[in-house]
Length: 435
Image (cartoon, rainbow, N blue to C red):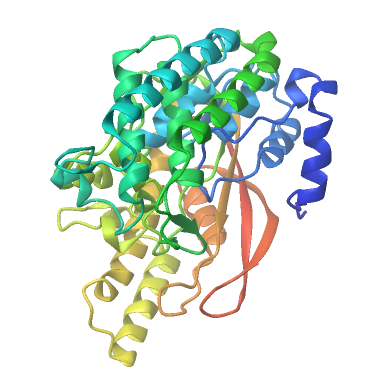
């Protein structure tokens, strides 16, 4: 079964008709999300296939910025998310908080915007560094991709952030901050997103306040339509998915719908670095290191000497075969960089981490729970093919899960090899028993 993403013209038509739809069918503005997040319609498909109702509870153990949680809440189905990245877990919490008064949010945001404009006028059109120009602390600035935001837009954003602190109203603060995070990535900064995050032509200036207010208005518009379904419970834990939080009760989850990272060289902390640093979620290299250590090992930039998840992969022959083939290819090609030397190890750490996660997960699943894992094949490690879905299914089966099937979600063209890579949904069932 293959699912096609909605085309842009179709999306525009759907947005034009949004007010005619029931709350659970209305699309939600892109408050904030990872570039690689999976589409909402995929969540809804598996909610239907698993026959989930408001009497059930859904877990997303790699919830990212909350796609599964938002869709479940729109349908009135209780859900729980686990996400180790502080910026993403913050976004998930805010995107599922619909009790906020949208008119009050707009009034408060307008007052903050007016105060920010007044402060910027006092500081002058083009303040100079050391003379009114706001800059990041040195340690924080070093974490950013070079030229990811120009000095004047950064100055304006920091002044706006100051005013959000000085005029803070706790009912609205989180939504206003999330609107700023989205604006930084999409409108204010110089980032562009392709296979990797990069920097495009620098903008000397940007209409920071107008961009932010546009995002706030979009959030307010959604809140007006979503409030009728606001009573559905959602919990978000900032935690490591390989060691599920103690707050999750035993046998409390009826279904899992999730999209974990794939084994590749995408450093997911780079994708969110700009907004994470400016909003203060990551302030220096030590905090960045701590963040990376709490993530599933999916790329060589978050591999550490003390890591032990590869021990969980020792018994899986296909994981060992793929890792050995990657290392053989590296030696054959004479690749000697530090990152290339880690390719085979991160492969074992990734699948070992997923095995650890699936083992930990057993305790919170009810007997008969259904699971859907959206994963993708990879060939970024010296063009050695990693059939992620097939390997994950084998690991799950060895841990006592039933493999119900593997749905083809879509195919994509590998940047380096031009091969067609499969993105699949691994479908599992937990039969129950000792965990």
